[in-house]
Image: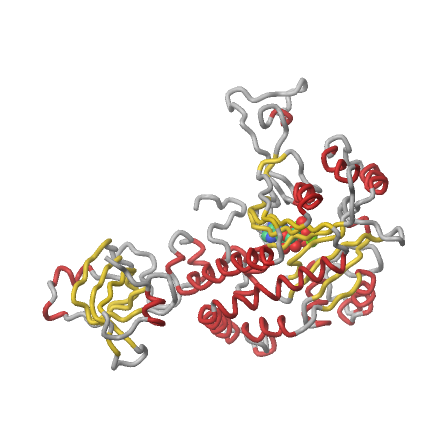
Length: 478
Ligand code: ATP
Ligand code: MG
Ligand code: MG
Ligand code: MG
């Protein structure tokens, strides 16, 4: 049997056509009207049941959550709230759903906290349906944008012996026999034996491997899960998150920033176009949430306005040094409203500072460049001032850091010198240093945290709500 998806039915099917739809019951009113949803859209199709001529045992089985198949002729609806409906000629229950046991049997909109407890079922709500369709579109748009520019999607490994830059804590990967754990002479677990005789961890970033690809294929990107064993209970950190990491030969820092800004605008615009209804729904959801807040804390702009604003304006580009001046002289700093006061040059920015720059000072996305070398990684290109490196972070309103990137240090002597200063063992990264020995060239890249992008576009407040199966301390079951 040919089944029509509800989205196609509502947008493209002629009335008068016989159709079969399959989905899950969202509501059943007066033994007569079924609201049916199949996840292709938040809009339900109304099924009209001829209850006088329907077997009462079948009627009893049409409960919220049940999976059903319905055949009938698509008809113009005379009722309020929908343009078409299907008077059912046949209804088949494919899977029953016990109303007494089903947790989403709710009259009111369930809270996000409640749904986080029921994460295995939350896909069935309008909010999560919209979020995951938008997430899907953003992922597709990223590939589309980079593919159109001729980038090669290079799959970097999940298991690796390099911890990139020690960007975060790493998860060990081991194939230890738990009954025979290898020990060092002093009795400690010998992690050097992790992986068939090598020490390994889950990747924290595919960058170093990505550079190997870029130094031959010119433009590559990796887009995969990355892992950080940070005991993070923030609304912006996960233990497992997805990262897009483009790496480009013959790019400098400005080219890098241009690519990142262009990509962010492209994918946001793509989602606004492709997922208009879902984003309207999420915008309304956020507006309802804002109404619960006191007047002076409410956002003046709707989600849709914020997204459009981001497309219509150049991101602000400033250096770290300029940012420190702004922060140090800000009334916020002088009134000691920051938890970490900015005394002067050299300090790392905390998220409260990043958000101040973006949300209070510039009121738009900011690309912050040229950080002190002490607070950035060894592979970033050293500037001529001897104090800063060609780093860039992109900061977004409501999110903080969304992108971290840099021009890479392509000069072997400078790179080795920096590694020595930081005590990074050169012999372990011999393969990385080879790129600087054999035809080195200027190159740059960045990492875009995919969930932070999804957070921004959906207007959600907690990163655990924008990934289907969030991994955070003590949460790994589903
Ligand atoms: P933060 O300062 O927010 O902890 P970071 O500087 O440690 O981030 P990077 O190593 O620069 O992160 O990683 C690149 C990008 O990956 C970040 O800009 C961010 O968007 C994202 N990201 C980093 N850590 C996490 C995490 N634990 N969960 C989700 N996204 C993350
Ligand atoms: Mg971090
Ligand atoms: Mg950071
Ligand atoms: Mg960073």
